[in-house]
Amino acid sequence: MKKILLVTGGGRGIGAATAVLAAEQGWAVAVGYSRDEASAQAVANRIVDHGGQAMAVQADVGQPEQVLRMFEHIDQHWGPVSGLVNNAGVVDVAARLDEMDWARWRRMFDINVLGSFLCAREAVRRMSTRHGGSGGSIVNLSSAAARLGSPGQYVDYAAAKAAIDALTVGLAKEVGAEGIRVNAVRPGLIETEIHASGGQPDRVRQLVHQVPMQRGGQAQEVAQAVVWLLSDAASYTTMALLDVTGGR
Image (cartoon, rainbow, N blue to C red; front, side):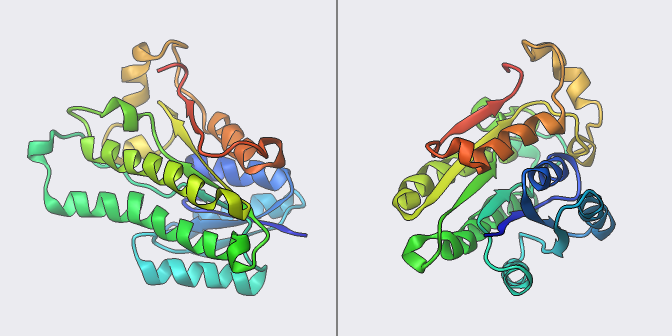
């Protein structure tokens, strides 16, 4: 039976590394993207060029109708997903809470929280034995920020990721008897493009002194944890919040 995986935000960084590694482990990978079709297609092409199965699928996870269309597209071309990596997310420029506005918070929670909730709902409707599915695995991308709070930088992002932790714990308990495992990976300071999008391209270098291992992590190191949690090797692991932080 084909193992079908959706990786949201799969065109770069941790998502791209996860998509490529999962394909090497035998998954057919739908590489989700919001706007950057070229990057997502490049990841899909890389997988296909190495003998795997992949396609790029568009959806801004902050737009419900686009998410539904994305899942339907995968259904029509391959069948229902048996794996989901809720990786799509955004940060914003460093600021104190009293400097933030409503529009920032709305964007932060629409994409980072509600988008993950909606993707998880659609995955459960396809995976759950209660709905006629054959089980599956969901891995949510949280962040060390969920427990650190990110004061003076982005407490809104930290709060959004804390919501992802709560989703992981609650949903794991909810669907554990229906063949679905739900876990989260909480990366620390990882060398990816997301820092530049928040106006801090040198953020890892500036904060690396706080990391016991004295270096930033690589996207591939996070992907290893994500793909393990997806796999049968983690068959008795659910509700885990796995830190990949170098000890931070």
